[in-house]
Length: 322
Image 1 (cartoon, rainbow, N blue to C red):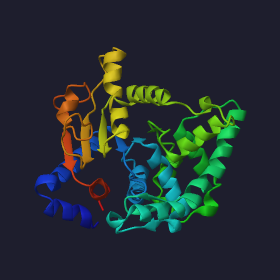
Image 2 (image 1 turned 120 degrees about the vertical axis):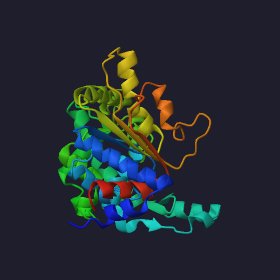
Image 3 (image 1 turned 135 degrees about the vertical axis):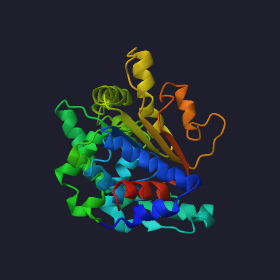
Image 4 (image 1 turned 45 degrees about the vertical axis):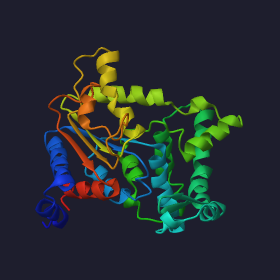
């Protein structure tokens, strides 16, 4: 079986961040080989970067057992699924003037670096159907977590009429098929979160119909407790709340719940282009997490200081033996 990407990486990625990439990939593989589980956290706009093309296969091949992501990543994978042909790429985004940006706004094109998300085709197509799911749940006295509503949306089939990419390239659909656990901290800070809030303000939905971030944390605490006997690794893409929220479950269980038999995370890797700086979570070196009771002295720790849109697909390709 040919493995051109894996073999290329092993042959030429020998020093500095390249070597860190290989070490981290091998460490990830070792975790899985030992029967440990892996949490992957997605920050930034990795879904708009179309990470789903390879991340969906990671999910299908059981290389990830739980995901933590921002609300943006939760919805933007589905937006790409239903509106891909309407996206606009702006390779010269660094040269845009304020007037250029305003013109994009007036065209309903919301820019994420070099890619514009089409508001009408992306946000509104999803809104029409997700609002009905929210209202049906409320009418039935039901409450769900944000990602559970998204799973219902995908599995219902109502979006199939809009599909513009191969469904196998949607990581959210792959996750929905497996009913993969997801935590989505700060979901309110997303387009769908804003839309839900608008319906609450209009009196058309109750805030309680959407389960909260505290309920995500208690869900994660139970999941970690039930699954950590062998060890759970932590693979962090970017920084921010997608990483900081789930990693805190260990000190919470150990210190606040006084469950002193709670194991530390068994592996840690972060891909980040944030430089080490004062007070920065994203730029903090892994050793700092020892002082917070998140990692042990001998936890395998890796940091790859590079662009996650380059590094993450390479590591996933290595793990998939591509």
